[in-house]
Length: 250
Figure 1 (spheres, rainbow, N blue to C red):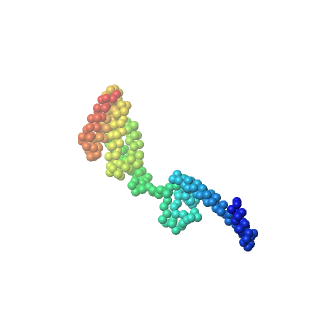
Figure 2 (tube, rainbow, N blue to C red; figure 1 turned 45 degrees about the horizontal axis):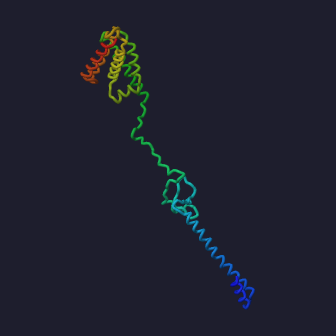
């Protein structure tokens, strides 16, 4: 303080004394405040430096979310730079999903849908087989000298032949004749009835109706062999199997 008073006494001899005193006071105040300001600024800078570390993270400035996808290439004000849209790359963001995958159209060429067969053509094919069955049944009945009525067999064979899709498939795609289709169905139906055991009157013993039904089965199998739809060994194997099963049933 004594130093300051001495300075003030020396200033009295100067012109404009009052203004000089005010200027000196301002200088002193500034000299006292400058260290404090520098110290305060240094503390703030150190606190900011401490706050920045490897673990600190700042949220990047992004534009509004576009289907949960973050976009790189923004202007400083946060708007999307339209000039960079051509080179832009999408990456999944933390809150959304990535770009939707392209929709795969099913390949229909691998399994093309077959056009439906004309109903009139199916009806024509079925009618031809049913007429052939009636004709062949009469010839077989007379030729074998049968006495039984085979209502069960005739009903089931007629029902199978009336299935237009199966009958048309056998004739149009398997290249079978209506006569061959009828013989195949007759042998199948007669064989199933014999294997059911319904025609047995005792163990290994068929009734009269069963014996005549066995004749129908043999007739159909032999005719299929003669028309080349079954080999001799195959036909004989099936006949032997049928006789064996008949002996075991009842």
